[in-house]
View (tube, rainbow, N blue to C red):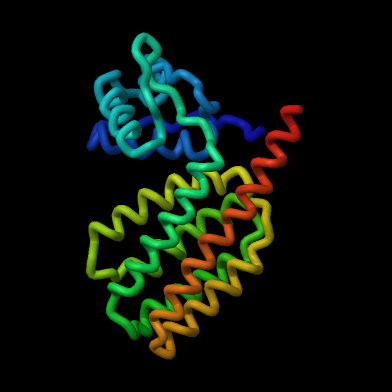
Length: 222
């Protein structure tokens, strides 16, 4: 179980959006337990704001799939689900592949940047840093897509995937590093379709890791 660090105070500018970002980060990193009821008063006090922006942020996170609410109980964290995990990996695989196809290639400057970031990803020793760099790598790869709505949708889906990956981020980065390298190589030669296929495979490979994690969780509960 990861230790729960004290959340930082929120500035007075853009309170609703800042609260949403901070609360999303807290949910993703396991600051709250599964199906834990969120105490709006305590959260507001921890973040140094009134309850109004906190409640607005909670409503937004419910719409984005991180929370759910019940009458007379309030907001709770959505529990992990093997089915949801599979759906999320399949969704992000398709979304990023489409976004990649809708970007202007070749783009040497962008490919140089993603290649450098991939090297940084491989060299990272801290598991948390690995996951953050992986998220950054994927975001950068599709950053030039012509369909910005698609990019936003992919980014949100990736954050929901991130919530799962946060729990098994000690896995080896070598397979992902090699996959990233193959995507870059295909894009450099103009083979966008093959790059999109490898990108999909890269995401879908996470399903087996997810299944292993769920099996371990259930074994721990026995």
